[in-house]
Image (cartoon, rainbow, N blue to C red; front, top):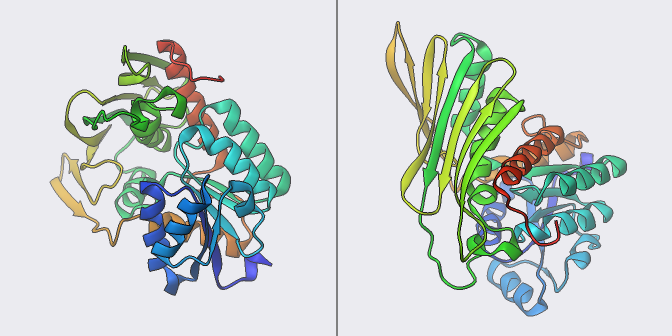
Length: 333
């Protein structure tokens, strides 16, 4: 039974940049009871090339075969956004634990289907919101929960970058679920959710590219029932390092850039002034979420307390509300 196994056998679906990053991370976690045993792609030749490069024994030319592979316990999904729903469902129906790259799905309706399937089958599923598990973010979470800073009044954060607009780039492709919100804005919405919970009101303004048809710049206001407010932005049209500041009654915390992989934060309080806390990251940083999945599987848990499925669904609802206000819909929605 999986919960008693010393080694968790992983597979990767997808062979792009994130798949390669996670392959290296999984291979580096061999001493932690991780074994990378399979990879799947839409083309078997691509899967075989990937498998040869990383020493993976099983290569599959379709996602269903990965889900049906008896040698696999858990699957990391690194497909384009539009394929997360179908790939996650196939994996769960093969009774494989799922770690699905963010955003969990394209929209809340799809997320609800995946979550319902996971709970029906009592199989582990988690959004790969790796930032939640980094030491600096865990320390910020503990600091806020301690209550010494008082109530969070406001969160201000965001970032901007200009990707290469080469033909076929996924960020500018509506067919693949491109745009700033689902790719980068999700980090900010997730951080606001972690700190303030689900918003009661969402206000958004976006700039949709006339050629791409996706949001290339977003400004977001999230109002919460306890009076807290989040002011967030993300842009593909200019440049600014992504950071986040949390303004509390009795002090503030500035999580240093990059907000998706912070290694330090600065705490300011009236009595102690400014104190900088450093949390160096070993390797890519993605290993923390893998350890979370492994620990859950060995304990027989089907969700993570750090990023529970109900919160993932709430985050998807928030992003749906943002897209609804700016009139952005993806093909098939």
